[in-house]
Length: 336
Ligand code: GDP
Ligand code: CA
Image (cartoon, rainbow, N blue to C red; front, side, top):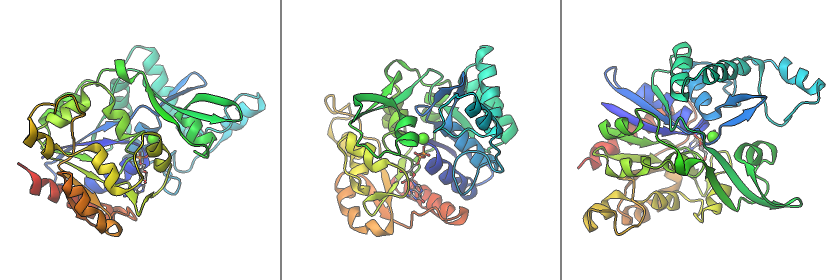
């Protein structure tokens, strides 16, 4: 079985660790990773979501934190501070720096981000094929208004420095409109037997991947069933700022609203078989909500998406593997 999963950082990475447990030795996972969180710091290219997936699956993640390296030290950051060079709000540890140095050195030498990611994975052996969504530069910006006025800030500044304390007014994946899917991305989607949306952020993780021209249409047209898992439980994100960025795109922070915003593929197939007259293609065949959101099942199914309520808290790898099995089982049920 060829499984394709879209992934952001923590939510995606933790789910993938469970998925890897849940599959057989012959099955293959291709991960299409979000690069809209990427940021250039100190002349280095930092890819937080790709690295979170790579470190989590490769056994190098700081478990409690969910990002960055285990057993990290902070000498470089302290030295930079002595020089008065920031930003102080972004945490790059010494071990993590090495990853960004290798990546930046290879990019400067002319390798693509896909090639660099593959090279970094030789060390980490994540057990999945990790593809960036695009080799082109995409950076998510957030429009905010505060005492400094209305302006766009980098997504990292919104989340890490401002802690998403101000409302997000708009989410702009800068560069996405002209980005091309990375080599292998569209091919993997077309060849997939199952496509999964882990419980990653629907706007700034999955949404950014879908904003790369061609990816959304490829998923809508794929022969494989598409099943997603809700990152929203009981009307709130399990962690992070999904509620803030969902509000910015006019979607309620509920398990059903997120599913209906992705849209059901069935409704579209049964209408025209085309793109429904210019409206956004629906993506989902199936959706898992947490048992706390049992009441959402009917509304999701009314939207043409098969829906089941199962425990969706990734408390450990075993519980997460159960979630992955439920997603794969639902994919089999909806397979046309
Ligand atoms: P990020 O890039 O690090 O923000 O990570 P992702 O976009 O991949 O995932 C973030 C999402 O994961 C958030 O919206 C959380 O609500 C969701 N999440 C985190 N832990 C869990 C969990 O245990 N269960 C579920 N269902 N969602 C979770
Ligand atoms: Ca992220």
